[in-house]
Amino acid sequence: MTRTATAEAANKPATPPKDKERPKEGHRETIESIVVAFLLALLVRGFAAEAFVIPTGSMAPTLMGRHKQATCVECGEEFVVNAAEEVEGGTAVIGGLCSNCRFPNRLDDAPSFKGDRILVMKFPFDLPFLPGAGLPKRWDVIVFKYPENPEQNYIKRLVGLPDEELMVRGGDILTRPRGSDGPFRIERKPLGHQRAMQMLVYDDAHRPRSLKGLPEWRRWTSESSTSWREGPTGTFSVDVEAGGQADPAGWAVLRYRNIIPDARQWEAIAQGQRIPHPPRATLITDNYSYNTTIPSYGSPIPPHWVGDLTIESRLEVKSSAGLVRYRLVKGGVDHDCVLDLAKGEAQCFRNGRPIGPKVSSGIKAQGTHDVTFANVDGRLTLWVDGRTPFGDGVAYDDGAGTPPTPKAADLTPVSIAGRDGAKVAISDLILRRDIYYTQDPSGGSGSDYDGLWTLPSFNRDDPAQYSVDLFNLLADPGRFGTLTLREPRTYSISPDHYMMMGDNSPRSKDGRAWENRDRDWDPNERQSWEVPRAALIGKAFFVYWPHGKPFGPDIRITHDLRIPFRPYLERMKWIR
Image (cartoon, rainbow, N blue to C red):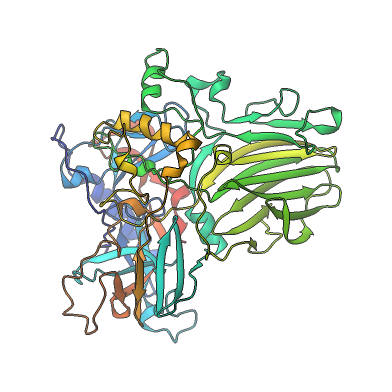
């Protein structure tokens, strides 16, 4: 039997007036259940596993609750928005913002899909002496009994372990031993989790069609017209030896600017009118397209600056000479990985100073390579064709210091450069960000920043004007001083207890929001944020049925049931 593991959202916005009633699941549920039952018979037989359904979006994008999935009409990026309100309030979700370009897409004609169906392995917690079993680990996705109502199941990510004190600060999770007055230290994710949990900022293969040919809206630009040149769309080449201009240090630089139209600009562009103000680069924030449900818009566009970034690329080496530098800026500090194409070596630098050893990069002879460079959780990591030359990466900060604040350089946070005869081409550029854990689920001040909403001209009642006001702030280095973090709250976790949080941190009813109304079933004096060991059910390990994916002719049995459909193999995955 399939059970429900709730991934609740806290402080939900008021439900707007009903404008269209949604049909019930009906036939679609029946057809999918037949397919699901068959798959379960094959997958679960002989294993101590159980199936659960994700109804809401607090674990998005790792796990989807009821949602709409669409392809942006502007840039072609596929994105997902929350549709839980259609069940809770009967109100149709008519639109949402693209994760890649923020264009407001109409979604009223799109079907709504039920949440992911997942498999949960139960025996590791109940029988820890079995081979391969054991107690849960930090960053595991866990199904557990909701401490305020043990009859209800929840699913969240385990972030806090027994006998430690936990702090959420600057989007990161930090810990120290319980009862200690020593410094907090950042908790770094295993690389598999780090890559699985990151979120899209921009995919250069999906440029908005209305902005093509307009250089002022280009996100990737060369600092000189004779430096990097774009051939086929999205492929940038440089030949430094042939006279490409360079900066004073000799580098020819291709740089990313986070230039996104705000709501008023998109309105003007869509109507063929003159835009009300020119494009401007803004700081990268913790945007979730999943939360941008129209008409309610869910939570407003989040304001929190995210400096933990990952750049993915395809690097074509045309000559075994010169240097290529990948740079990620955080808090005005340069974090570099330099590839020596002649020697086949790589080394990391921070603020121009080497950190960590020189290692073999695997890039020496001419050829094409997939290269990814990340600055996440105070650690620099390089991937070359799936290998990690630095192992888990080069750590540069134990998390004990004051978190950085954004600087003007964070408006151009990513660059790729060549020097000393480098002759290369770069393509398939994708920029991603780390998950940002907020101090509160969504209520209270609505921001990790002190006094942000008391600033003049912020209009949170008008989503379009709010977008303009926020973008103006995020584009003005002179105002970055207002992005001062509030004093963080800490959580002391007792022995044999855990703390859970959702990946959709701004919209997750998790340990940060619980009230501890019922302690009768827990003999200990449980703190509101704690989950007792006895409440753990199991570890989520596989999405076996995301939803049926329609294809071919659009035959509508109901609004939400389209045939034919096939298993959505692309989203069936191991859960990290």
